[in-house]
Amino acid sequence: MKKGIAGSVESNDCLITVYEHDSLKININSIVYDFFKDNIENTIRKTLEELNIDKIKVVVEDKGALDYTIRARLITAIKRMGNNDA
Image (cartoon, rainbow, N blue to C red; front, top):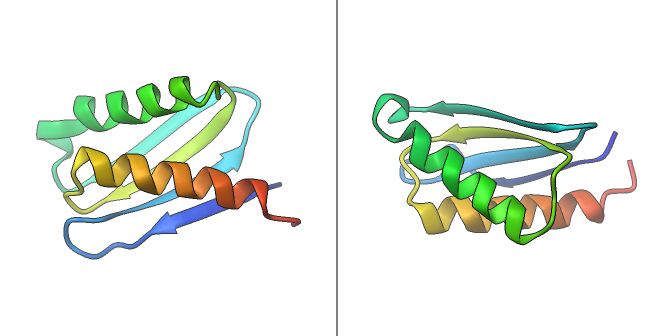
């Protein structure tokens, strides 16, 4: 199974892991989950839509990252998944 990882679990960052999957699945674990869960999920969905990706599993370990950080980590993880020969 291919996977890609980007980011860290440092403050104001997020660690995003993406896996090959037969449908779209998003798991979010965030220190600000109660306040910003919808914003985080919308950022992920919008980014995936722009990349024409609808079959992937996204796991987010968020430590208060801003939208542009989440987007950058997601795009990088997806690119790394494509370069993974595992």
